[in-house]
Length: 212
Length: 363
Image 1 (cartoon, rainbow over the protein chains, first blue to last red):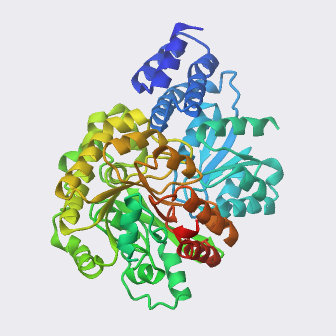
Image 2: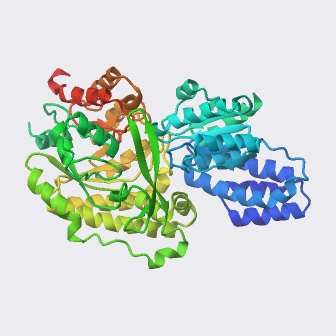
């Protein structure tokens, strides 16, 4: 591995935006393949952050600053990605369901998915079922990832799945869900394809769903 | 037995006639309950943090603690639509639907200290305004002889600071701008400390502080970070209150997982930990590990059992808690959070009736 890729990896893990910016630009200028910078530098770093999070070695602030550093590097890489042999891991629509305004969990999931090479369409908070339907229909998303923090807003998860069914889109999109009171059991009950207890494990779930 | 004696015994690790109870509700559930109990519903709602309690409701239910609140947590549910509270924090509402009707939650959407330099000119509200303490004054005069009175200053540091700054921004500050994070925490800390000292001087039995630092499966910030930013302030907060009245108890609320810092909380003199979310921390294990040094408050699951379980499930859970977390006292039992509108009335009554009809002598 090029030393500069190793440095980018460290910079992302430490959340050092300034160094990521400088090193990613330097790597591009040096003609290092964009796919190497992305996969071996940034995506690998975010995977490591996710792993440390699962192990209880890293917490939300560290995850946020790493994701922010990753996004800075990604912005520099984006103009070059089209010409490079980089395949998106998949397109994911994310949002908190109707009635739910709590977005930290959703944001972390979006950041970690982006950090794993997924394209994100973030619909924000308090998202009505029809907006999820519209995004799947118009933007060709392969996964809908939605969350609810409260038991009172959990029924909106089922309503959204029902709306995807009614629109005839359920066959072309996978649904994954999460949020504090949400469990695998609930996912089974409402007919979701996947569940994840936290942002790091959401990446594994999304990858599994793309592979099925 | 008087409610206040029941609570005092429990908090002294003695066994009262039955476990003391404290229950709060969202305004929507409170309205449903008032109808169910044929209450007038004319009493003013007082409970902070989105609660809909009235003293009439609490006393009619046979609760043992009465709460009075001063601080930013009172900013929840101020208006039906958008509003800006006295801290300059903007709010909006979102509606949700349940089988029992429509409710709403308020949530912050404008953060006055989002810009780094905004703090230079920020003026927090004045915690010394006499009108803030009139309810407490009346409460103490009217109910202290009978009830255990709690002065509530929750959202003590972190939650108010994140409302001022924005949640993700505040979390990033801990990692990248620690000096700014310290200054941000200091604003609500000073406000709520002033309020808590005043309430203690007025004669409340317990001060309830709170900041959510736990998520469902782990702490939001590392124990190390908590020890840096929060522990010294909390230690000072508790010690200042105890120097005013050595008998005053201090309770602390954090959602989710807080196991790693419980020894620290005990070390700095905390008396009561709330709300003990059973899906996040095993109540029986907590009792085993810390039950001789710490009391507990809450523990009836608001994420699964109360909204989605059967009345029998609720009854079983209450009995389990009384036999574990509440063994030999040391517990104020109740739901982990405000009872939500999606809770079936029979589940609610199963909780209240089981608590009230289970004397310690039968356990």
